[in-house]
Length: 126
Image (cartoon, rainbow, N blue to C red; front, top):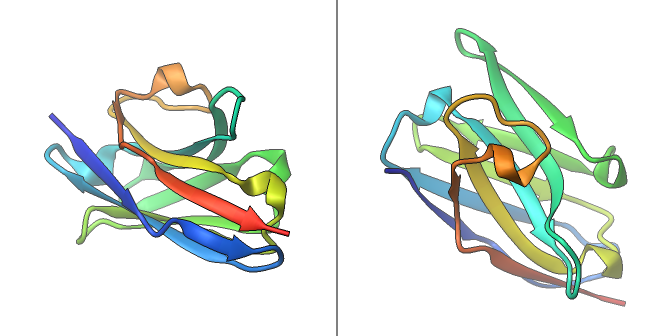
C-alpha cells in the first residue's frame, strides 16, 4: 500500500509561484510514475504533469499544454517525494492539486493511477 500526502498549497497572487510537495510512503517510489492532477471548482480532474522512469536512474516528464513553460515536475527518490513547481500563476490555476502514483504505466488519464493523495488547495487571487 502506498500513501501520498501533498503539501505546499495556499493563497498566491496572480503572477506568483508555488512549489507543491508530495511525500510517499510504502512501495518502491523510484519505480513509480508520479503524476500531478488538479480539479478546478466545478470541473473535472485534469492532468497537469507526470514523470516516469525510462531506465536506471533516468526519468522523463510530460506536461499539459496549459502549464508548458511554467511548470516543472521533479522528484527526490531518497526522500520519496515528488514536487511540482509552477510560476506565472493565473486565477485559472485555482484548484485542488493531487499527486498520484502509478505502479505500472501511468499516462495522462486519472484512471491509470493506483494511489492518490488527499489533495492540497491552491487559490490564485487576481
